[in-house]
Image (cartoon, rainbow, N blue to C red; front, side, top):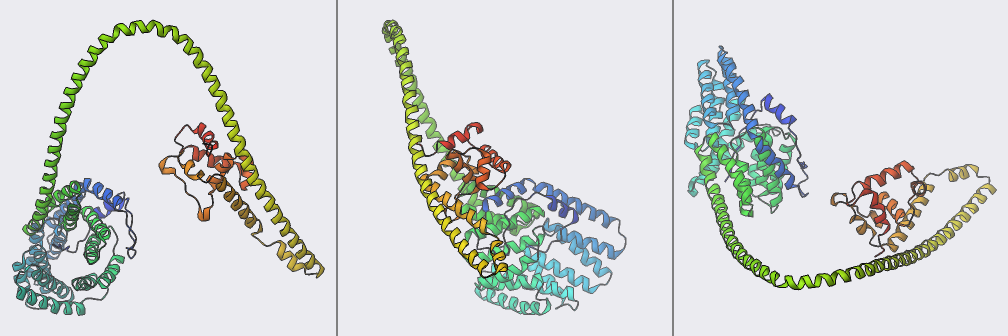
Length: 570
């Protein structure tokens, strides 16, 4: 299966709507397809655009109505010719029958004004429209009526492009090998003429080069030309859908199914925004989703594509979509029947369980009446024991609280001793290191003073970055000691936060500023001014950090830091 996208000029009204339309696409880099693309967000955008498709079609019809009014008010043949050509371009991807009507009127107006170049150009456009919609015999007859390659540049270019497209389509759809060989040879002949006629930077030249590489299985060549084409269009341009669809075809030469779906989604979204009824990318995407088992989405997409094909009014599109739609419908009905069968089984099982439950209720009520007398006798005994149990319970609760407080104090004392030992050792080690550094620095200064090298001494003492390096070493030692004492601190801390606010360990096992603040709180330093002195930032900044994290806590924000202080105490 394949679909051809004719060139489309987007009207000013459609452009405004597309530009103001909210878009949450994950934008793919034109040459960066090695990255995994976020398909879920594109599906969301596609579903959103499907809900607005009628608005895009309405806007296009308004633009067409303006052109028809202009045509009715035009009396000059040239003005009528321009209006009819614009209407043809608007209808090209909206309604095939209307497009053929207006391009035929262009031919009549060109004949009336005896403009041979315009007549041949419009015949070439009409031939291309026919070959794009399966009217191959008509397309061949129209091209033959032109009488060879036209002399004017625009007519010649349209003629060559329509010819190579027609013979390519004939070669693709014919079942006779000898015919396919003849058609391919004719296509190659017109390709050579097309390469000489079109500038190497034109889109039609690049498109043919890309398709030749694709037909030959040359993925690198095809994607090279695709990259050039992609760089020349914006996502609001109708031609962007054509480029994206051809890029999907290129990726069929690889095993990157994710990138195939990505470019089909991009092409489909662009088609919907431009009110395109020739929805080739949509039903191709539905076919892939059906193969992957996503029947609900594929069923929804193929229905939309079928409705578009009906509005586009070509039998070849309906013929192409019908097998895909039938296959999706069969799979969807099969799944629906399976679901109905399972639902029936569940209803039967539930009915049996209800009967069993009713029998159990009757039996339980009977048993309750039997034990009611015994319960009344026990009630008085229970009342007598209740007072005694209440007093014993109070004593147990008090004893439990005393034991828990004692256990908590012992645990805090044990952890405090462990923290003290760890940090005292670190402190002594760092003091020794800094004393050695100061001694080395003192000797270096003495030497420079002795040698009267005051400029070098000045440069040495004003060298930037010393304090930052020492602070970095201090924080590194603090992070290392803290994570040694509380290796599970980050995971336990994240358990206190909402899923979207989870924090991760920094590079080389370092704590982030936020984690370092709450590490100090875990050690008992909860005064923002003291924390700001240690981290060399303002107390207001510390307060903001603490407030921001408390706002994403899963419990009451006022109790959050109490839970932080209990991390590692289990």
